[in-house]
Amino acid sequence: MKRILKWKRPVLYFLLFALAFSIGVGAARLAASQNSSSVSSSAEGNWGLSFRKEGQKPVGNASYEDLKQYHAGFIDDTEEKVIYLTFDCGFENGNTPAILDALKKHQAPATFFVVGTYVESNPDLILRMANEGHTIGNHTYHHPDMSKISTKESFQEELEDVETLITDITGQKSSHFYRPPQGKYSQANLKMANELGYQTFFWSLAYVDWYQDNQPTEEEAFKVLLKRIHPGAVVLLHNTSSTNAAILDELLTKWEEMGYRFKPLEDLAEKLRA
Image 1 (cartoon, one colour):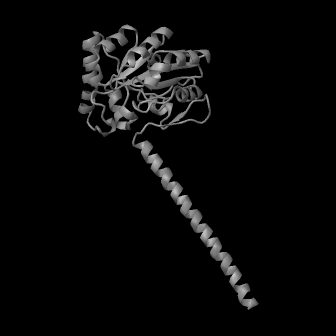
Image 2 (cartoon, rainbow, N blue to C red):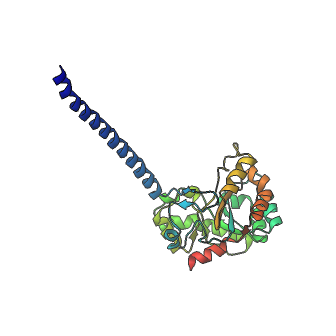
Image 3 (spheres, rainbow, N blue to C red):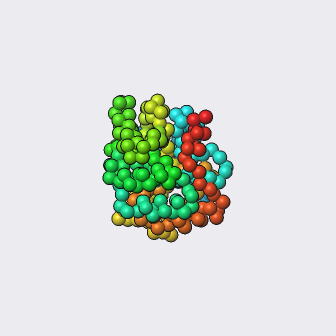
């Protein structure tokens, strides 16, 4: 009996080792699969950010240099405490006037990325933005997934229809600043935009502020926006957010107290063209 046990013990150890090795390989394969899926998602053009440390710049799923070759960007490559304020405008629900009031109080320039229906429905606000020195950017006419648009003609139409509306209202030539709806893009899109004379802008700081019926509390908003602010930030806020309208004056004050100042997106655009 003892001889049999002595014979079985090495076999048992071998079987346990084989099982552990098999589990380890399976876990590694699963991790690789998940990582591969993440890479694929990034390659398909869903803009995303990874924040490493409080107050430090995030890492985007495309680098500053990767985007700059298309005159595009998401952040300023600087250690200077500057902020570029941007707002995405899909529709109007009464919060934009308060946002404009806060910007005017702080003499803070902003870029409003607008969709076609917003421009058509709110010419008075478009005119106010322009008259108060803000930049009006292009968020496409229909707010589609631009990464699925394959022809330059269709791509151009989405942008030029908005550009024409803005010029008709303001009497000024529209900026050629473009932000892809939902941050969905492709390398081909970046190239198309560049060839058409547009600069693509993503962002380096945003938070979940776009659900009209599920707004973050003021405390939740401050926690993210103060903790994650960083030098050269391109901040994305939504004009539909009642929280943004309520806190913007105080938020700009807090950022100023932290040593930040606000610059127009044109300054970053010029650096990206250099």
